[in-house]
Length: 303
Ligand SMILES: NC(=O)c1ccc[n+]([C@@H]2O[C@H](COP(=O)([O-])OP(=O)(O)OC[C@H]3O[C@@H](n4cnc5c(N)ncnc54)[C@H](OP(=O)(O)O)[C@@H]3O)[C@@H](O)[C@H]2O)c1
Image (cartoon, rainbow, N blue to C red; front, side, top):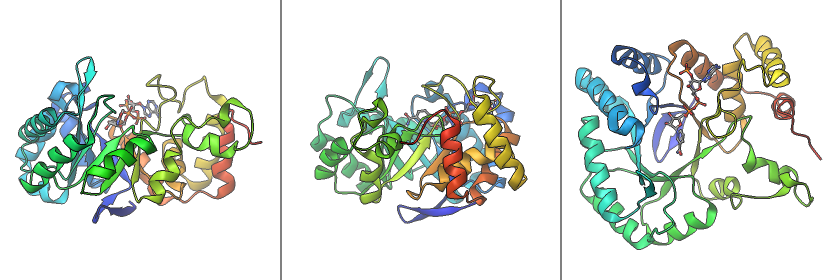
């Protein structure tokens, strides 16, 4: 497993995403967490809304049964999405953290992320909430999710603590944040920058991008590995996987981690074997040529 500096902590390049933890039976979820730790994962991603709190509760039960593991794990959660609307109000942020801590059975979150931009967000109010959370020891570090560069600029003008993470969807089949840069100064649809140069912004400001849904195509439309809709991509992944003696899942994670932005990959699988394969990708450094081969096998072209 590759580890990297995340806000002064050494955390795994592969994060276990806990969004689907309630989709398997409880003992299976506990075994999945054990397997993740055995594979070298020490970083876990939650959100107050995953399974309506159930995913955090399952993890909290795991920690209750394994109290000595708490200090070895980096636990982050997110808030700000409510039923039918977004809410970055101070009251909601503070309340959500209290609920998450209770469900997770812990005293403090290692990192809190704002989940998806609230059009009505007031940075002063967020700064206030973050300061209270930090002073009380309930949250150690802060990040965001799905934010563009100017939203981050606005937030960082007021929040004193560093913003250390931005979660964004990224994977071979979801590459908007790099497509436009490859097609710079052209009139093709891919030339449009829809995220305010977010990748460069994060690199310039030391914000770690955490790639969510890296195995999905579209917005949760399904996994592309072993999917007959993507024969060219699967052939290419298989050929490269064979050359390293690993599976296609490992090559997908190697592809995300090959980007010099030092992203982390959030794996959402509920399958222990698949999770282990994905972790193997963290030890592989793809060549530039292989990286581009995979990019092009998704059907994209270079100018
Ligand atoms: N910040 C945000 O807005 C945001 C949004 C979404 C997710 N997230 C975070 O990102 C994490 C990952 O998201 P995700 O679960 O959508 O990511 P993912 O790892 O791309 O997808 C996992 C899903 O795809 C299936 N899958 C993966 N590889 C497969 C393969 N080779 N063959 C068949 N099925 C495969 C898994 O099934 P199995 O379980 O059967 O393997 C599971 O249903 C979440 O847990 C959450 O922590 C954040």
